[in-house]
Amino acid sequence: MWNTLHFRSQRPVEVMSNSVTPPSYDFFSQFARIVNSGQARSIIISGNVNDLFFDGQGYEPLVPFLLNKTQVGGLIQVVYELNGPVRISDGDRAKLREAWAAWKTGVDLNSLAIKDMTAESSKIDLRRREFDQYLRDAIGNATQALEFLRQLTICSRAALRENLLIFVEAADMLLPAGDGNIARMNDAQLRRVAIVTDWFSDPEFFAGKDSVCLVTESRSQIHPRVARLPQVLSVSAPSPDTATRHHFLHWHGSHSEVSSEIPIDDVEDQGEAPEPDQTQVLAEATAGLSIHALRQLLLAAAYNNKPVCRGDVVKQVEYFIQTQLGEDVVEFKKPEHSLESVIGAKRLKDFLNKYMLPRLKLPDDRALPGAAVAGPIGGGKTFIFEAVAAELDMPVLVLKSIRSQWFGQTDVIFERLKRVLTALEKVVIFVDEADTQFGGVGEGAHETERRLTGKIQGMMSDPALRGKVIWLLMTARIHLLSPDIRRPGRVGDLIIPVLDPTGEDRREFINWMLGPAGAAGEGLVDWLDEEGLPPEFSAAGFAALRSELKAIPPQSEMDLKSTIDDFIQPAIGLTRRYQTLQALVNCTRKSLLPDPQVTEEARAQWDAEIRLLEAQGIR
Image (tube, rainbow, N blue to C red; front, top):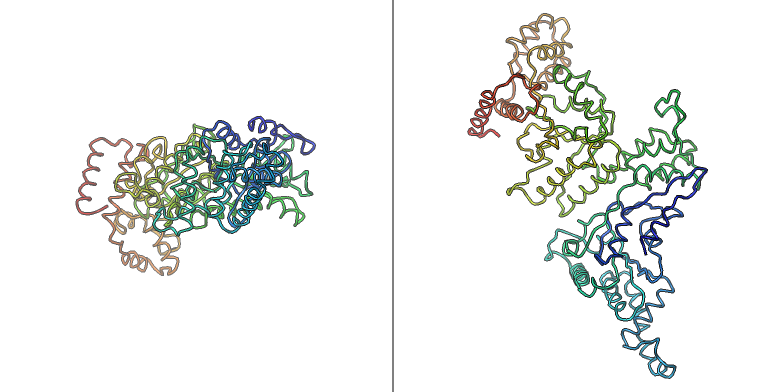
């Protein structure tokens, strides 16, 4: 019956002068199918649970939305949240009170004669008062409330014609995951977990007609004794897509005086084309925002008495995503430099412009999922690929750390991240020091690390995210990345080495370094290239020398040579050589190697040198 109601309420309705199809919430259809089929009687709704949802008339929080959608005959709705009352409508409360009295006294109130009713009245009144007392005691006592709700489902099976649908809000606060260790839970938490575990495991309960829905942002936030029960199923509410945001903008525009236009100079030049639907433009520009956040954006524009502009949208998207994930998890990067600013790397820049950038910009399964960038420390990997991110003209999320010291919190952060990425139209995930972010999946890895790495791997190869999410992984230790991440279909499609400059690239770096030296550096390019600087000199080394020459400009050629001669490279040569060799053996394009005609013998020599360095303790 719910599926019928669901689809009936999803008919297009007139919200302005145009008809815009209301959003269709697949998660509710899934929830209805589970309950109607009896597949499960205990369900967790997670995901975007703190947002607003359209119920056919307006936008409401999740639980009122669910109550409206499930308001059908033969069903009594019960709602409970921490420190609040057990909420039941007046008419349904009277039905439950009578059923409670009948169940506790063993008397069928509907079949009692008047004289029998009089004889049993004291017992019946006592049980009615008991029911009311339980409702009062449940306020501020979560343990009492959960036990009372469990008893109500037993009462329902014994003496109630209708079925119960119980919504438990903020279930993660009632049944917190903690560190997963029962021994470290307090008595109240321990009892609540025991009550719900017994309740959901009761064969009579899951064979009955009553259902319980736990609402939480993440299943991982609920204690595993409950969340991992096989009879508990999950339904995830996703972030709103473009169509949902488009509908909200139309609906909001018809219910307020807010202008939801983007000024025409903030929209791409349309030439002779007709003026675009401004609400559609804004809906696309606000990818990643929840309906709540979009509403805030519109209200701020109304208060300032001006239309929404592109700058407001960008700030709101960045603010919302950072508040969702935390500033210690992600930050937005706005690279200011382009590939034209990159010194040297001529062959690599040609490859990026002609092959990689066009592939990354494709919108479907023809797109690259991303790339892993390897090479020795100080080689300029981050600078070059920040320029690549700038060339893509997409939001750039820098992944800082998605691991948490708290039990289960890493899973929660990952779920939030995936929800955000799914909502964004196109995004670049930039991960520096990727080998420390993503560990292994072998026996030596911690369970949390294995689970996190496995989920990241799955997201990289998810067909639904292909062409939407681009992964750029920077690492000097490519060999420490999981082999599953390095395989084709993930960033293993393209592993790029960034090596120390040689030949013309090295001479370009030398000229750039000598820039601040002025006349003192004239005529020293050949000397620096051939003998003044070591053959393996990094981009970071050139930058350090340029900085010193800018701070203390040499007065003569002798001063300059003295400065160069005084500069000693740190004792990391063997480590950088090891990282260079790992970048070479893991490279997936011959054209990016120093010698594109590399032979198998040369590759075997690289492997032999790697083993020799490892024997010396170099990793």
